[in-house]
Length: 265
Image 1 (tube, helix red, strand yellow):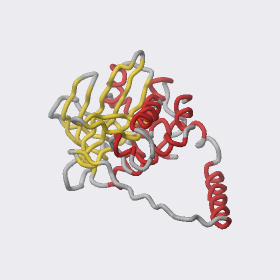
Image 2: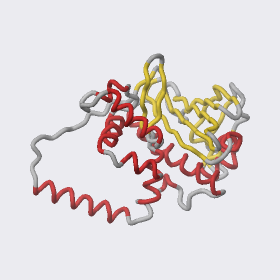
Image 3: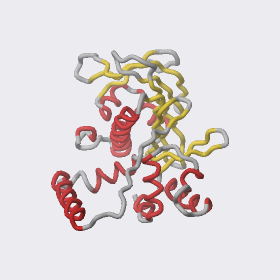
Image 4: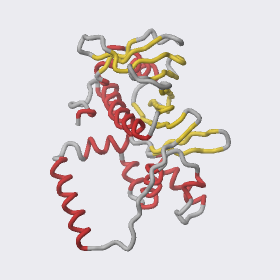
């Protein structure tokens, strides 16, 4: 968390994060546009953000794409915001903004346009989290029905063999699956690729890839959700993955999930 606060302390790095929030998956050249700095300076700022796990980098051919990783920000929110009285804080913030708007008239108004990151697999989101665990335990947490029930609120049920079906079943004993799909790739304990579709919906399913990599004495878990239908679906998925991964990290590192399910906050 110290690295995250250090990275956020710089105005230029915060601006780069804002640029990625507006349009995820940008190259170095695209991020340099409008910043007024050399590629070398921008690269140094991006390296600090990557070291703090606030962004992740993906190579596609010759291009190097930068993606915003919301997980550390979600953890800061849980640690420093959620435990306080959020409604009152939000009300005070709204009052402050309205009062300041009455006092000052801006010389211009800038309204950013959101452009979803697109890949050959459609709109995509990417999440990276570091866990004090082993690849084997992370794999078990992703594929064991009882463990997923603890931190996800659903049981992930399958034999996890390529070509097999999998279901995201409710834990109320009804056996109802809120998500279902097929196992595309299963390489224990390094990589799991599944399709993801909501029952009763038309169209091509999205795809989720879990990459589990040793990172020194800890594990780097990267979750890539691709082929999302539109920006609304991407934003919905982003909220869900940030909450689930935080709960997973808590379970593996402390032996228990967060005191309150983060998706209910």
